[in-house]
Image (cartoon, rainbow, N blue to C red; front, side, top):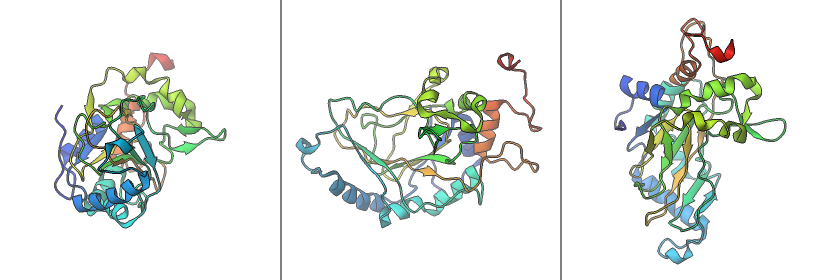
Length: 276
């Protein structure tokens, strides 16, 4: 499958449609290589590993979080990204970020990292303490992947099930606002198994903007150079709305409505025997 590329400051109609139907878009050169180089220096120090000595890379993955130093703050606030957030989530409907959150740094290693299952990211804590998702995507407007190193097919690129975000609303809707836990949803994802898979590869500075319900998975690293990638959420400034009087739905909302088979009037386009 061909993945569209982004080199200008606004998304085309084709890219927005791709986001709605496939669940993601890829933006090349979304932030400068120089920022990534500065950021990797910080992260290498935090790992305690020597970038020039693979013998020190003793774990398949090291997770680092909470990075708000200048390279990370600048990377997530590039004008091209803010413009894309406006187009995908809606102007005024998302919260600016000052950091890039968690970095799962993956190393060439023979051991299975133990975190390669298919999933959607949980976005809020339930009363029982479990991390959950609901049909309104409470707590998450987008899933984002920021490549801070060049990522080829052997470098543990994130696997993406294309269009899988359209399967998730039906799974979440019956659970209402409480939603499902990360594990409960994970047990229902066989419905997405036949979706085509693409790999989140790209050069330094590439950003993938993904629908919050997109099903994805990590994998083992079979290359030579560690993979540095941030996967922060974009937080919403207001809840997702599936019934707007002015029909000013964002692409994120349109995709959820499509998954629920809602017509412009808010009525289901066709009967669902499972609900009768």
